[in-house]
Length: 357
Image (tube, rainbow, N blue to C red; front, side, top):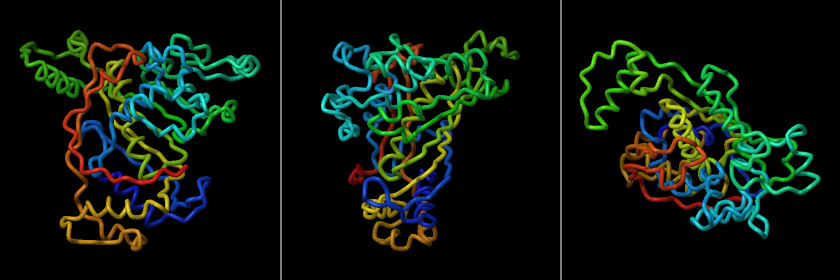
């Protein structure tokens, strides 16, 4: 994806070396923004393989949906057993001896606690996080957002935050992707007709009716709105984490659009500190080498980083895949891994890199 290469190149060209909590060191830039149109394909990086099962399982875990399965119903929602059982090990280093992470990410999405919403009770009684959304005792921000999209899609305050100041000290890791906002825009009649034609084609049918009013399209459940999502990420491991983050929030966008009967629009990715770890030099060089037209051309992009864009080629990986969700799922908290299908993902080979902890 060109947008991702642009981010990597910007860090190389304008980033400054900085110390960080891991001791590895980074090249860092601040304030970059990328956009991904869902109509152009699902933005799962194809220049190197990104492990989609890990993306999907982690999102299911964020939503608390795994706790509806018998194997996990008696565990706290943020216990990592569901992840490790599905070979997702990215959280292992931060979990305690029982596999718990505290009130991270999804726990804030669906069970935000503050002074007026149970924080004091959890503090005093040492309450465990709820096991699934049906047991929420705080604020289910994500459900509130979905409800507002259904009833008042023009609302400019449809926001979900993971940055709960009152509970930062209880989290195994402060949230890197901190806050996201939904934006719905009304489709024109012509745009809705084009969507309906696609719906009919996918079903293999023909509709000869004159659909000259929006009311007729409403009766056929044609979406009235296009939905976009903007994420603010305060800290981003650009080589390892960002491809994962792009896919995760794009999948969340598809899920929310699905349950609100909207068309997925674009994912806007806004960064605070976007960085490349110093021990990812060889991996960054291999990635950018793949933009070149000839494998025999060898360029050390890292060493030439102040002018890296002058050497970047025009190959940004194979065509993007598509995503398909189970049409029978109507509630976002009912999605399981089997309800998500990735279609035509043919990336270039994986580039392994060490995780900075």
